[in-house]
Each structure stands twice: as structure tokens, then as C-alpha cells.
Length: 555
Image (cartoon, rainbow, N blue to C red; front, side, top):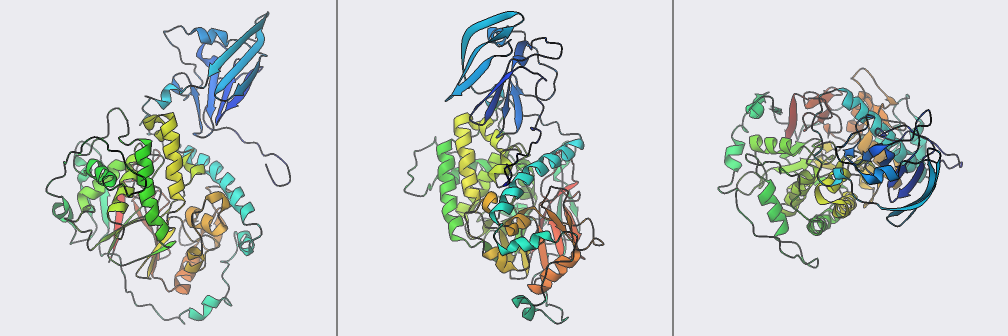
């Protein structure tokens, strides 16, 4: 609802099982249960279509067989008496707690006086259904973008209202105009007068690009663009024994750090050459262990600044989006964090979007948290736009938690992960010369200090325009498009031109901006005459098939 009291209506996500009217609808928690009704012509809806559920948190319609993918009603060889009971219209429905009560109605010309009670039970899709991995169509990316635009519109409205009284509001009106930088700002005195900066930090002379898995065992092929000293990293970094077995789960005490838990996660998941996805999709941690892992990592994030200050060399990773296999391939080719490898002299920086879209968000985020606990000074995580409950409730992470951990434990774990996400740092500086962030500088970010002043924990709905720009903005289409433009991702978002990048780097005495957030087909894309680089480390993303997934080195 808008502040003026008017409601804004929008279509629900997903595909409803059947059109209908004269039905009843009632909420239980986040689920809208639709029962009965008739089709055009007055014919009552029969069979499994008589009941449908919209899970508003997961953004999907469900029927008895799982997620609804079309309006062709699914048939079953087994007769279900409850379907006959729900063949009615003009009935009354109400919910109390987890139970739904239905009374009366019409079935044909028969006036009903029965009273039904139903329990809100888990659907098949939440217990044993394996999501489809068929993502061949490029249309999926378009649909995903449209859904994301709808989600971010709601987030944007909340953020804009939260910052309405702030002086930053004046910066939000400059779409299509010149960059909102003031030459009279305090930072202006610090600008170089046309002098060139001495390049203290540089990207390594060769980009690291790992080809996506194509046919058979060809997924480990490497396209060398010019980088010499990293070919043998993986040989040096594989420990002598990577197959240690662990005993069964031990009770952990919240008053102490879970000393064995993060090591258990690393032992089970950090297997670049021989990790296999669990056949039954069951996740190996329970909700209590997830809570302990999040608690230990959260204590570390709470002590870190909003903008990390890192020393080179650093390996930088783009979006992973739950594609754990891609992370393992990168680790296999170019080494992974271990004391037997390069962790003592190379830091690891991940630019956000660890969850959603892919099939293994749980493995991805739990391994990264475990590595953070093991190497708190050398493994660094910053926040992406999908590390927010409003977004990852709609794009797969919440549903994965429920499917793989059960409804009660899954929702609890999903909530706990999102509490932790609110503490993640928002950017990183490498040698004070390179700034790394998830999205971009948008319309409002003119100095690094603006980011440093953001207090954590913070959620998107109470964040400022600075936070929205930092996590959601993108560069313009190419170097010829300058200034600020509307962003196709959704209302309130902008793209920024190469002039904004050049001015920001000059004002803050930076050489380079490294960001993620966009699916670029080569996994790596330069902008603003090389002053901004976009990385993307996931392959086969939403039907798109980037040729590579990418990391880079700052040395």
C-alpha cells in the first residue's frame, strides 16, 4: 500500500493450476489456499485441481504433485476422496492456526451442510521433489529478470520511504542528467590536477578463465589469456589426504565456538576433484548445526568494518548463485584455501550472490562460511543483492532450504542465514587502489566514506539509496552511453556511464572498480576504458550459457 492509502495490485508469480470463480481462499501463514470453485459454464472443478496453494514466500503455486508448471491439470491413478469433498462452490472457509475449516456450499444443485477440517501439511515438492535442471531456453533469463524487477520494485519503494527524510533523496532525481558530483564538495580539494596516479596495484597480466563443462570430461579445459605462474597452483594446493572421515554429529554448546563443525563442513565439501551432489538431495547439516555455523561466522563479520581493507595479492570471485560445481572447478584449476597451498600469501575475496538460482546454494554458503571461520584473515565475503530475505525468498534459496531440510528446519535455517547476511561487509579495498563491490556506484555514491558510514546489521527495506545503488546498479550498455539512465532491472534503479566511473576513481584516487552482479558471456567484461571490470563465476545461469566462469588476481 502506498503512503497515500492507495493499494497497488500486481499479478502473483508462477502459474495457477486453473482459472475459477465462486471459490474460497484463506491464508495459513505465508500460503494462500484456494479451494473449490467453478469453470466457465458453471462446471465444478474436479480432481486435484479442486485445491491449489500459492506459497507467497517461495513465489510458486503448488498442487498435490508439487510445483505447478502449466495449467494442464495433472492426473493421478489413485482416487482421492478428499478431492470429491472439495468439489463445491459458494462455500465458506476460515483458518485458525494451521487448520482450515470449510462449511457448506453448492455441488451442482445440491445444497451442502457438511463441515470439513484440513491440516496445512507439506506438499510433495517440499519433501522429496528434485527441482528440474532443464534450463535450455534463453526465455528463462527474461522471465527471471522480470520477476527480479518486480521484487526489487517492492524493495526500492521500502528503501525510498525509509530514506525520505534524508538529504540523499535529492540525489535520486538525476536519472538521465549529468553525474551528481559537486566540484565544491570537501573531496574536491583532494583531486589530482590532471596528474596520473602511480599504479601500485595491478591485475595480473593474464586473466584466468575456466571453460564451462561441455561434453564428457572436457569441463576442466583452460583458455589461457596470458597468465604464467598459476598453471600448477592446483598441484601444489591439494593436501595429501582429502578424504578424512568424520564421526557422527556431536552436540555443540552455544557458549563455545563449534570447533569441530566448520572443519567437518570443509572436510565433506572442499573436494574439488571428487565432490558429488547427494543423490537424494538431503542436506548433511541440521538446523541446529546451521545455527552454530552462522553464529561463529557472524561473530567474525561483526568485528569487521563495512569496507574491508585488504593487501594484495587477492583472488576475486564473481557471482556463484548456488552453482557449487563451478566453485569446485575453479578451486580445482587454480587452487583452494589450505595451509598446504597459497592461503598464507593470497587472500580470497567473494563478491556476493552466493545463493538462489542454482541447485546447491546450501553447499555454497556453508562452505564459504566454514572457510571464513577457518581463515578469518584471508577469506573475505561481501554482500550481494541476493543476500536479502525479500529476494532469496523468491528466487530459490528458501525453497531449497525447505526441500532439503524439511519445512520447519528449512524455514528456520533460511531465516538464520538471512540474519547473518545482514552483517556482511559491503565492499573491499585492495591496497587503497582497487575497490570491489557487488553492484556499482549508481547515482548516489561519490566517495568510499559514504559506504563506510553504513551501519550493520542492515536490511534492504531500511537501507538508504546508497545501499540500493551499491547492490543493484549496473554500468550502461557501453562506453558511449554516459551519465545516468534508468535500469531495466526495475523502477528506481539506475545504470551509470563511464564518466561516473572516471570521476569516482579520480575523486577517490582509485585505479579500478571490480564488481559482479551481471551475467557477462565471457565471464569477464571491461568498461569505462578498463577502469571497471565485471566478473561472473557461474555458468549456465538461468538458461544463459556463459562460455566461461571467471576469477581474477590483484597483485
